[in-house]
Image (cartoon, rainbow over all chains, first blue to last red; front, side, top):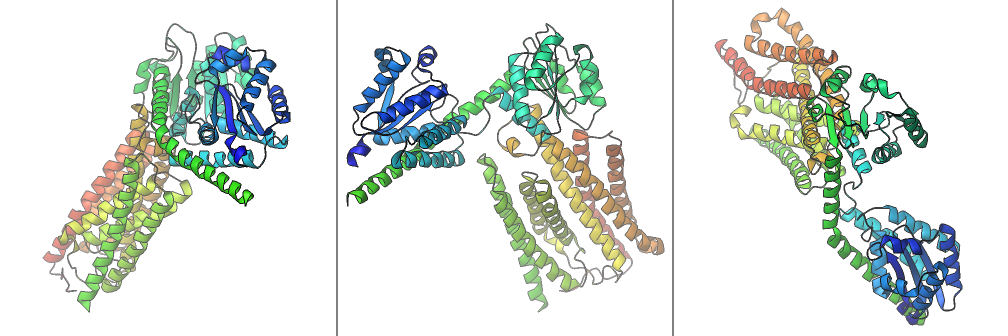
Length: 349
Length: 286
């Protein structure tokens, strides 16, 4: 068992040191990742293994009879992907034993992610773990490590601010909309223009339960295509001004050279709905909404800069929590390491 | 024996005030540390303060053999008690974040203020309601309606803070923990309607006495009360007609509550002065 623990390692490439064009060459499909995992497990000396394959990282967690197995694994990956081994050696990293444990905990808590504190990685880790366990590629050690890493991630998120505040334009918009309307289920959204940022923002709102979304674009075909993509309805661009009073959230992302929504237009719409607030998100460049609209009572106007500022400040706040989170994870890693060593002694006895 | 009771009820009021103050400090420190406070702890602290204040009001009521609303100290205590009681009804039902902290703040201000001026707890003649239960009900309902207006002013203040944050693109600290502007505005509307109904009912009960005993009614008190009622009724009508909404509505309700509070002291003084001029006893030994 002593040798076993001494040969716990993680080998991988990630967004930290590996450029996108290199990561693309190592990218695996779900089936390829599963196949690689099975191949690794069938190698002599590999007792347990797990492949974590996301758009930002390809990592292999292994429990082997010797650390030297890491070389065999990297050769296998390079052969499989038809990539020179020198390239892999240039960008790959590896951690052993306690360091490997600490790394896993940091990955699961989102500390190692491009967007610090994001929680998607935890779902991906859980999925990778379930797949590996079902394929009988993991055993007592990796099962324990991964399950404990999920717990540690939860504790870290609760005790620090690494997940606090939204860091994407879409999620910042959802956050602001919640501060204005509370529950978003009954809100009506109008998406003006067929820009990508606007579409993603509308998707973020839809994911939070908004069902009533209308799309309008100068070219009706574009609006119709986008409406079909989002599963919503398209409305005529010429009539959107007359219908503004019916919408709670208006996302503007057209390529119009001048402002589409003036103070007069909004004032007229707000006179029809004095008690209901209106949230305007201007993602267009040049702007679609006259900045003086902000002066209208019960109207909240945010442009791309405002949303980016919020996202950036949230990201900075998360980064400020990294050291605190890392300390918590260190304690967890150390405790977990001691537990594994104790089990090892008991087995020996 | 009598002195012991005085010590007991004032001490009990003081303990309740300390607990409300603790709840407020707990909320304030949490917010200064940019954390949302634990609702359970806030609720437990307010529950503790409320229970002790209820005991204190009972002790005072047993002493004067009526609802303790005879001097500004008791009115402030009863108002704080009504405010916290309404929080227990509204808070869990509508899950308005931070309302507990704001309630603790105003309750602390009211009870601490009542202790700050010893003259507010001046003794008064027994039987202030003249054994007339309608008048007692009128007084209790009037102060209870002020409880509604107190919590309305808190909700309005929360609305103004959240709206300021949204307009000025502020999103950290207290802003991120406050309820949405729409929730707050809707709650303010409901509280205004309920408060006006309760105050109207209170005035209706009072009117039964006033009509039959007009010469006994302090004119200043009647005028001030009617003006406050008219003020709230006007805001109510304008709100129903959607002519006074959101920000202006919030400002109006806060201003009216401040006016209502400011009128309590002169109303009380007017009653004492009129009692003096009519040769009625104004103090009783405790």
